[in-house]
Image (cartoon, rainbow, N blue to C red; front, side, top):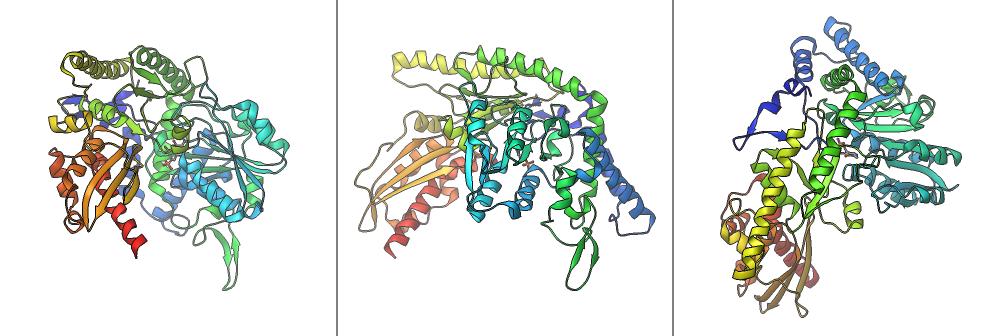
Length: 541
Ligand code: PLP
């Protein structure tokens, strides 16, 4: 639907038409949004609020109208809409705005499925104020354990901050059910709507939330834009946390009088072009109809769930189609690391994301280091899903063919032979030095936060020589081959020699061009070596 409005979707990647299935990370931008922003800079560019001249007047009117457009979209009032740089900034802001109300021993309730952006700001608030964090678990159907909500929210609860749609599982949480419980105990309800706003009709009053955060770039608007909605009566009482120009009604040398809403919370020069772009994106969505988008994406998601779950070895990590869920479909492919799956799909022109998706605690809870995620928009089609399914099936077929061969030739399963060189695959299939070392001098764990690869490096050092080396852990083909090769290289070498090894030495070992996104995988081994030796030096200092 409406694919022709998105210039980028005409691109080819590796000679194949781009199939963009990474919409949960960011959506593509319709031509209208791009043109509106260019036009602002070509015709209207001036700072808002402070100028009498014509351009400033035009810019101010457009910026204020952008507040109105966003307000109408989520059924709020203009004064309740604060422009930010994204959901992350919105959530950080509200955590600091509520700080004055939080005392030692107060409780903040979150869920296990939160994105880091709706977790770390609350961790930090709890640390600053000695408050207590509590977490609503995820049940066996990948939903919120709603029966626990009643027990977790108590008279001590001051804040409940929950995602409306999980960016990993696709689960849609019933905010209205939670809102009743939250308000009974007089706590604040904050909703992370980063994933839900592009796909669901949002009425902040119906939801019963006090604050709601979302990002402009996930809703077809520009990057660097976001919204913090706050209930007007609360915003009037709360104090600003950023100070400077544009947010005051009067200033003396000693004091300042805060401006009206929403300027009180919008200090400094705002991202006017971004706000205008976001408003145009919202008008664009409204021209299609959010209910039309919701229905279309639900059907596409159900189609994808059916097709993907029919591939042997593919496991969906998220609710089935009978449950409330959005168009975010995460999965694992037996025997293939999510990073390798994503890389193979990329070679087919298919853009998906792989890793922990900034929800590390959820992945830990599910006992997974990463998943591959396909996330859909209204411009995706069933043909896109078919292409995804075919590409995964091909990869799986390779694996099973190789498994058959392995029965007779003693080799183990392989991943795409065309993608990685044979020596990388050899080290991945049969890693060297992969075992625990008990009597080691150094034991150093290292993590690649991008994809969840985890290794532990063991070194035995005698008289400045690495007499033995081994590692444990799992990861993608690149990171496993890299650590396997590096351990071979450093065995028997002096520390003085080993310390001279650089990134280039690791790339030379691997022998293939390493794309920017895979550099962290490739260099995890070197990072473990360097940090392990540094911690040994610190211990001995
Ligand atoms: N919350 C959720 C559920 C998300 O999926 C994301 C981004 O993926 C965020 C918050 C943070 O959004 P941003 O990086 O645009 O600030």
